[in-house]
Structure formats: structure tokens, C-alpha cells
Amino acid sequence: MKSTTRGTLAAVVTGVAAAVGAAATPAAAVGTVPVPVPLQGLSNALGTEVPKAGLEVPVPLLMPSVPEGPRYVTGHLLPERTLPPVPFTGALPGASLRAPVPQVLGDHFDHVGATIPVNDLRTLTPGLSVDAPLTPPNPDHFGLPDLKQPEVGLIAPVLQTVANADLSGGPGL
Image (cartoon, rainbow, N blue to C red; front, top):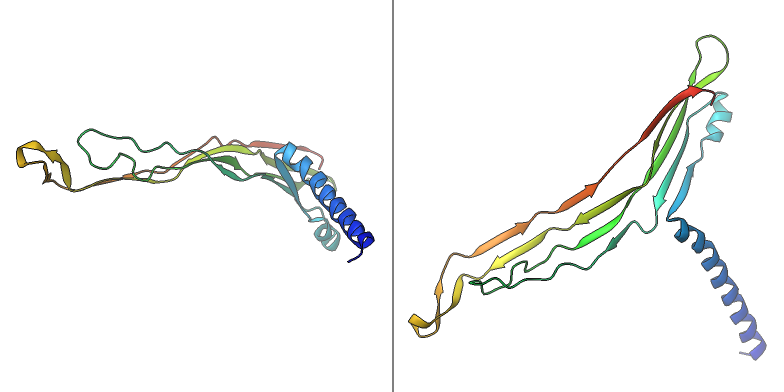
């Protein structure tokens, strides 16, 4: 491959990478990507007003955090939280809908709308706490462990968010 071809190829790859980086930067800075729902064609085909809808998708949707590690508990051979729950943080997608309501008298429209903003979301995966059916070494039995009932515990998953919505209605579309 000639050096001019390599140089041209490098310039094209650099330009494409810069364009992709520039396109991705505004979405990352905003934190959400608007997704319009195209219904204008339906309005033209039916000859009437149709609802207007849109979505907001958070970027990134869920990010894992550092789990809380296992802890030693006196009297147990295995640590507590053998399989620790993993926390995730992110956001719920938002939506907006605005529907026309025809007036009884006249050719004008009013509207009814709902807006659901992007809301924070915190989750915690299920975890597992297990203990072996043996006790720690017992000096009364020459350092051998005693038998006991095995213990298994499930750490419940968690889902926390505060969802809210704005409802509106009024004249005009």
C-alpha cells in the first residue's frame, strides 16, 4: 500500500471518528436522547388531527456500581453476603403525549396532554448468604468442627424510584 493511500485512509478514519465523537457528545452531555414518534403522515392520510408523541431515552440506561463486599461473622465459616447484591443506578425513560380533543361547536381543537419526565432509578440485584453445615474448630473435640444445620439466605432485590407526571389540558393544539 502506498504512503499516499495510507495517509488518505488515515484522514478518512480520523474524520469519521471525529464525526462520531461530535455526534455522541451532545447526547452524552444532555443525558437523554429524544425519540420523536412520527405520526404526521397519519394525520395527512386521515385528514384530521392525531396525537403527538415523543420519548426520552436516558443514556446510559443502567450503570453498575461497586457492590458491598462480604463480611466475616463470628461463628460462621463462610462470610456473610457470600454473593453480594450489585447496585445499579440509572434512569427511567420519559414520554410526552398530546392528544387533540374536538370542540363540540366549531372546527377547532383543544388538547389533553401528559408529560412523564426522565426519573432516577436505583436497583439492587438479589444476593445470597450461605453458611456451611460445620462450626468453627472446637477445642473440646481435638480441633474438629461440629455439625450444624446449613444456613441459606436470599437477600431481596430492591427497586427505588420516584415517578411523576404532569397532566395538562386546554385550548389549542
